Image 1 (cartoon, one colour):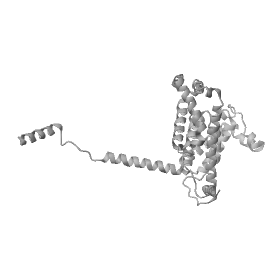
Image 2 (spheres, rainbow, N blue to C red):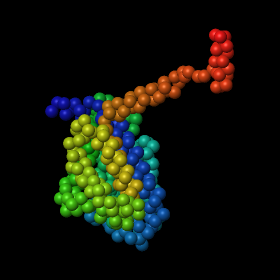
Image 3 (cartoon, rainbow, N blue to C red):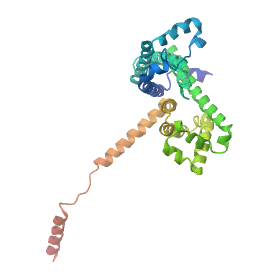
Image 4 (tube, one colour):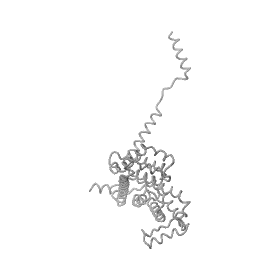
Length: 317
């Protein structure tokens, strides 16, 4: 119990990972701003598709006032601007707590207005932004044992547990599905035009590729909680990053993949980032030594070398 308390209170953990997560989520939200802002009035405006209300969560009094933002197109566009400002602050590391609050509020209201325009990463993004309100600002230097350090580490622990629950739940849900049991789930997914490229659909008509690509993600998700507390942690996270890059490229789920890659980078500890940085520095130094190593060169051209050999032979004769 004493060790747990010291871990929570002595010094902030995952500072590099938190920063990587802020950049990943900020980039994802800014991508959504640029791609969805031209259609803001159509999606969320007073005469748009959105008809949802935040009163279900915030109550009639507060929710009714908040919903008036969408009563005009200028209010809708302004809320998109708030989301963009929060996302940019997260990317640049400026006033990260305020930027997180702006991004969370705008993201939440837009989601409540049009809950149908979501993907698998929206729920975890909203939860993680909530936890990040308690994370230390970028470049902060808190006193050891202070309340801010304690809150930061509690937020770090909450995010990590959320990731574990997310992966484990996804794995168990896949394990309980018939199509995943039979090794054909990726075939059906790949044939849906909205979620795949034409080349992707052709690749997964191969039974061997389809079977392997179905079972491997399921096993990866089921073993995730165990792998990240073992020596396989870094390779496991690297595989996950590559997996989500594939989802972004072949299935077009860019925002979902960006959020999940950010969470994978978050799970890497500060000491592990330090170890990787040291390894990269060693490799750079080794390459520099190889590049600057003196090389033996021929004295002149080949013809000049031939003349010297002939001259040496004449002298010996």
